[in-house]
Length: 145
Image (cartoon, rainbow, N blue to C red; front, side):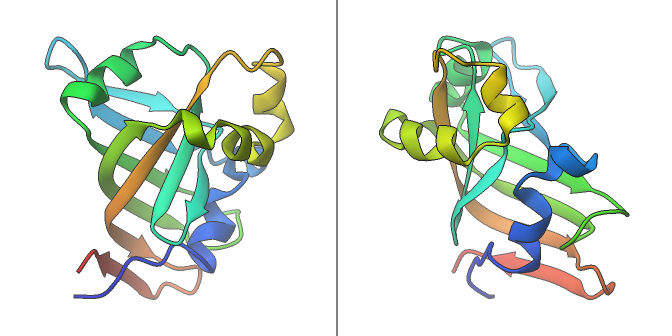
């Protein structure tokens, strides 16, 4: 087992991914018990062990779902970006209004323009595992110890 470290190639891939055509996909189980997938252009590395997204609707289905079922997955793939080329990330999400200022400020401009009034809320994902491949094809395998 190894510790989670989202810096380096992983952060290069995730931060601003939507600006280079590789929007991460968030998976969670909705209120009806159905798997839900959504593109999240605001996805960013918040710390070496956490991802964050901006949920524009503060009372949306994602927030209601993670309150009951916090386990989520994030999938990322791109051939034309810096950093890792394939990532499958699992973790536990929570609404984190205390991170609103940081997450909003670190989003790409396109995402900030979609919520100029800052009506949304930060969602933080405490990462439990990362599997994938780096830009040179080397395997990435990290698990929270």
